[in-house]
Image 1 (cartoon, helix red, strand yellow):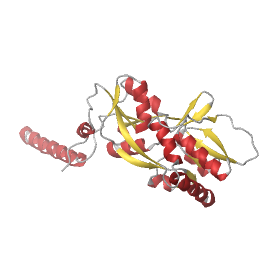
Image 2 (cartoon, helix red, strand yellow):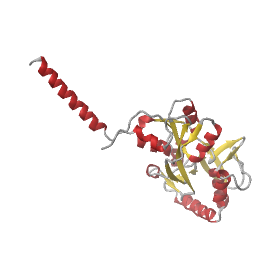
Image 3 (cartoon, rainbow, N blue to C red):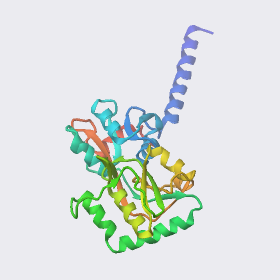
Image 4 (cartoon, rainbow, N blue to C red):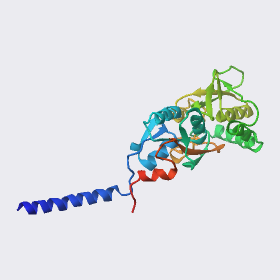
Amino acid sequence: MSKKTIIKIASVVLALVLGMTALWACGEKKDTIKIGVQTNTTGHIYAAGDFGEGAVVSYENGAVAVEALKKGKVDCVIIDNEPAKSYVAANSGLKILETEYTTEDYAICFQKGDAELKDAVNGALKALIADGSVKKIVDKYINNSGEALNGIPVKAVDTDKPNLVMATNAEFPPYEYIDGDKYYGIDVEVAKIIADKLGYDLVIENVAFDSIIPGVQAGKYDMGMAGMTVNEERQKQVEFSDSYATGVQVVIVSEDSKIQSIEDLDPYYLPKD
């Protein structure tokens, strides 16, 4: 076989390989963007689904993810809108893209099979939504309207009433956070008025976000509340109450970022047929 023939064969083989590679890659995502998320949140789930797990960098909480963005370790952060506003207000040089990434419903989770507590909470929640109590709490934190904040002591107070133990991740303002020796936030106050209506004392356990569902599953906590979105995977693990709030996932970027709109994320996808 001549040298010329070998070169021709090699060229054909190379062309075939390149063609097959292009076909295989068609419709896949480029792994050229780094997206900061809080571990096991829906922001994490959505980003991994849209861009691939290789594009996602997960952090213990949103504040750490935002710090990584400031240091240039990630290109953007996907997180809930209300916490995003708090982080941007506290960190100059950052902004939230105008177009929302997705919307979702927040609900309370319970151990599978705990229909009694779920039904009781749903009954209380329905009444408290109907009389405007839940809306007042949401407006207080999001629209800065209404009465002064009612903190819940970090240390449980002993009373004669039975406890309702709620697991949360108190690093998610304005839904839950700690200020001094008290818990504050939308979830904290909604849980408190539910507990009051049912005749319980609310006890809050502050844990890592991805420890909430396993703890509820194991019966360690009566319920979990942490701006938690209802999705198919979580519904396999726990029961959910009716929704008490709507959340929005947004994208935080640096003000001088190459990503200035949701549409700017498109270049991180390879062309589709």
